[in-house]
Length: 307
Image (cartoon, rainbow, N blue to C red):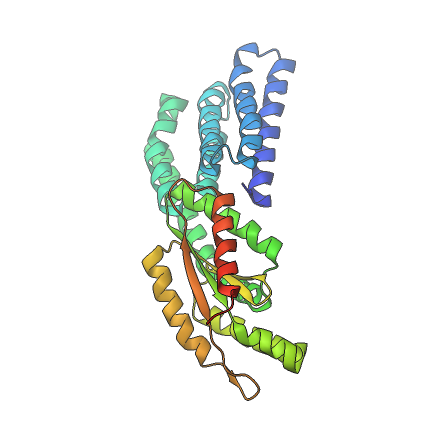
């Protein structure tokens, strides 16, 4: 099961924080405070290889980080003179790991609990209003950043689809989407596309025409699919279009729509492009290896000679 570099970096930083805090308490002879960060470090150290081996869902590792931040706040903050400084730890972790509405709701609900935990001196209207104001401001700031990043993400995905992912990168991204679909209990489908005219163009007219048609095909697919969809060339002239959050019916609808727009691509040498496709939907409990094997079998079926 693939894990993104950013998530791996976050896990390594959290592991380093837990270990450093446990060593600090040991050197300061705060033996009663060593156990929480030490247990969290051990739990994260065990979960990381399990996550890489596909034995643990990525969401569980995220929840471990979030629970660890909450436990560290509950243990460390009441014992320090500047306990209010610890308020930022669970807030930052929750916004990094959870969806924006859920993180915002969690922070708004936990502010009174954190102030109560810090002691009666901190339970004031000013602290309460400031905590809520900071939570709302952070949520609005993140929402603004995400809205501004949407056009950039769209351009990035168009660039990736225009140049097409390599087979290795395509399978890597597909494994990530399979893990996400399993963790969030969302549907996932892949549209396997075969363009026979690309074979004809390469054999009869050279690689230049084939590349021109391939680029036109990629641009048409990118303009008629969502920014979250991923297109890659799995085999020569056989493409995978990964459709996150799409069931079988949605994938069939997308296949019909793409067939019509692909047929609009025409060159005098080859005529209008044809597309043969098959839809494969991830089944509940299906492993990434088995799903990729099904996609490979679908690609082989499309390449078989037609009567």
